[in-house]
Image (cartoon, rainbow, N blue to C red; front, side, top):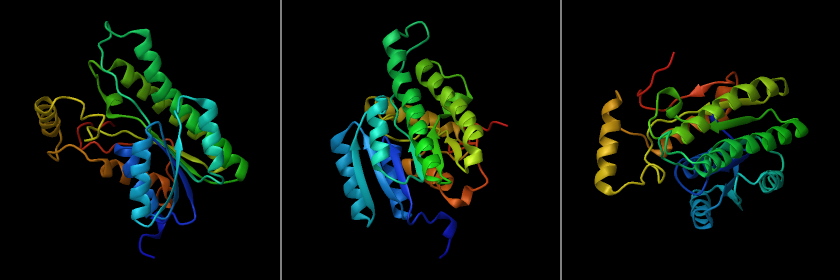
Length: 254
């Protein structure tokens, strides 16, 4: 078939944060590429909507109502997926505060979801893949916030920086098992997470971010989902420990 390297037929994928935004777009796209997709999130209504979108496009999906910061429940959900080939650890939450305003509870919640939740997903996926002898792909979700100072986003950017180090470390630790581990670090993507301001402020923020991009626009969830598909597929079979940046050129690290 054309572009056979992107064909995921016969493979099983697990996507956290699948109830909306980048997670939903990824779940739908992986299913369109042929994968059976297990969708996990804490939002039942959003999960049901994602399931309908996958099924409506001819795909196969299963839903798991689970908080990724709950290690045991996430382990159980991943185990029910059976022979796992792809993990897309996308679930995340946002918090804004300056360094001086940051409280313990702010940091604890962000680290619990944005770092520990990714760690737990990676652990469950790697154990499943190693146990089954699967040469799989694990994709984590970092952020453009790791490439520059991000005033007001201490907790978020610190957790995402930790995800980058987790990705590189795990890539080295499981590469001998044929498992690839990569991160996606999006720029400003139009999702419910970024669409949290009043309309006037939101429009102003998006316009400002668009001006920073050589492409003159902000991103959409599909822009990131296609990056995940690339890393999940055989098209990236010689890629591991890397950070793929769909950011419109806002940051161009060496």
